[in-house]
View 1 (tube, rainbow, N blue to C red):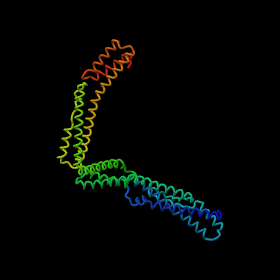
View 2: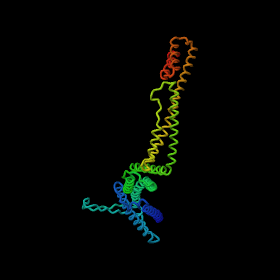
View 3: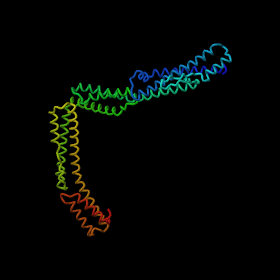
View 4: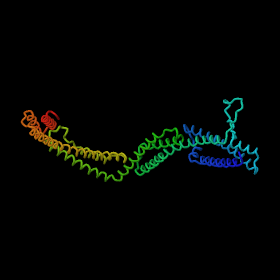
Length: 389
């Protein structure tokens, strides 16, 4: 190398050394790195981090000999204002040759031989490449561990928050949530497993289950608080809802009475009342010795049953009145088919006339058998269409 070439190479290597030093300092100040240095690890994470620490040790060892070569080169370059040919040759060997000596690692005695262990010689570029590979191994382990912690630790923190909220509600309510102690112990176990072995601990299914149970428990207690504070109003709302059920069932009975004289109905079409049973359930709730959590559950179930009963009674009345509408629709179809028969000149056809008479008799009978009447109208319609539907 010329003097100018040496100066350029040394400036480039100095910049490279400073950049590598900055990267190593950033690595050691990384939050996850700091946590892992003093952590008690196990399983897959312990093995992965042990390998990463070995890579880091190799990295620092390579960095030491790399910097030593650069120091030697800088000392020679600074020794005199004009470098001799021998010094330029020495600097060329340091900066471009295999100047970095990597000492052979000591082996366990069972892996040794009596032959001398050969040291390895690398160029500065080869040394940087090898340092980069070790650096990537360490950062890859950090990234994988960090990803697991970032994904799951916030969920554990959220579960802790829910647990504290549940404890507060228990205090306000004066009651304990069922199984909360087991959930708290499970949460601690999951957190310990995640902290000690984020790469190997399969905690996500358990965390999903735990989060669901905590959410359910929190919802139960929040509902119990509302019921305790507003029980009188909730009861009044239920009494009013029962009145609506009573009115809907009365309408269904009236519909049945009006329809049964017109349409033939099976015995099971008779509306059945649920209002007495629901009223009895409300009365039983009044005198129960349940906790507020259980009482809130029973109240919610009763509210749901009352809504269903009202909806069912209204649907029954609508369906019963709909049967009369179905009869009237069949009467209209029969009239339309008769008009078509006249246009086709089939009004006097004996077979068609017989089918018309049967359908009309069924439709104008009381109570009307809708199934037979619908079949008779279909038969007459096919007859005037030449046997086609």
